Amino acid sequence: MKRKIPLIAVLIITYFNVTGQQNNYAELFLENKFKEIIDLSDVRIKDSIATDNDFFWEAQSLRKMGKEMDALNILNISTDEFPDNKNLKLLYLDILFDNNMFSDAEPLIDTMLLTDSLNFSLLQKKILINEFNLQNENAINLLDKAIQHDSLNIFYLSHLGDNYKRIDNILLSSFYYEKAYQQNIKDQNIAKKLISNYLELNPLNAINICDTILKIDSLNIPFLRYKAFAYYKTNKLSESLKEYEKIYALGDSSVVILKRIGILKYKLNDFHEARPYLNRALKLDSTDIEITFYYGCSLANSPEKGEALKYMLKSIKLLEPDKDVVSAIYEQIAFTYREIKEYDNSLNYYSQAYELNPEKKKYLFIVASVYENNLNNKIKAKEYYEMFLNEVGESQDTDSLNQVNPYTSTYTSAAKLSIERINEELFFEGNLK
Image (cartoon, rainbow, N blue to C red; front, side):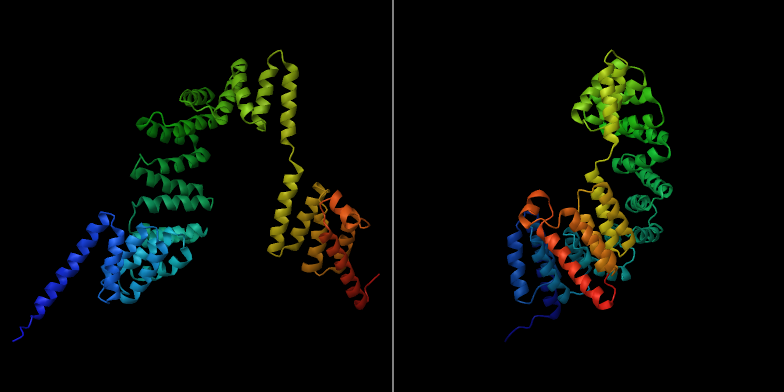
């Protein structure tokens, strides 16, 4: 006679099989046997006896092997089988986040927050997405709500500081950085953010923060730099020089340190000692206006008056903007105004670009194009197309045009075709003169 197994025994056996399988997965995972985990779980998934743990550990293993998209596919299948499993959803979000797939992650985060509004992992991700999208006000609203339930959370406090700074509210930014810093005065990242604010608000407070960090690590060059600059900002030149010389003695001979030491020595009337530091800085960066000027000044207090004038005059020349750079800036501004349909502003900046750099005839062509295609002003468009052709030399043949200037036959042909089209339209409108 066939013996029946009691239902409770079946449940116990099933429980221990599942638990044993789960423990087996964990042991294999710790031993980096990811392929073995995937083979085991694949069999169970194929046989339709998989539990949520099978999907979880297979996805984790695929992730560890660098196969994030395969992990996402497995987790997509798991959501059909276990739609309420929070751990599977959180793992799915983690992988989306690690791969910067924020637009895919955000709807799921929003859905999960509806039933778990205080979940730190979910809130953290939502806040980071808002920051990535430059939605700082949204991030602040979320953080304000979150901090009511967790007032000492360093992530919330520091990110309130970050977001208030991004909307130029440096006072509130400092308030939250201070609260975050009070949780851990050894946190150098928050200390740097707080010092950055204090350098604008009250440099003496920046020095106090630097001293706290330097008591723990007296050779910390970044904080020695902050301290030196804070002294400089408060016009404590001797103290500032002392800190910069410490940094130099520790092996930092970068252009910034050489420049600061040289300028400070000059301002403290040590002209002779200032010279070698400024000279070395100038060799590293010959385009720096301050270095050039102060080096000239230091030479002015020596017999080398002619050399002094040479460098002081050079510093004036360095102040003059490069016309190619400025015209390129105007061009980009004009292009952006055109993109947002502010055509008058666009024309204004294209015109400024051409006035500054008249060798670039294309600006005339672009102005004509704005008048024709965006403002439907045929008369003005024709005027600028003709001006463009006159400037580049309408009578030149294609070969000579390509040889003597950068405006290929594409521009000239387009200008001529536009003039013909405009003339035809003006004729039928009765406006051709």
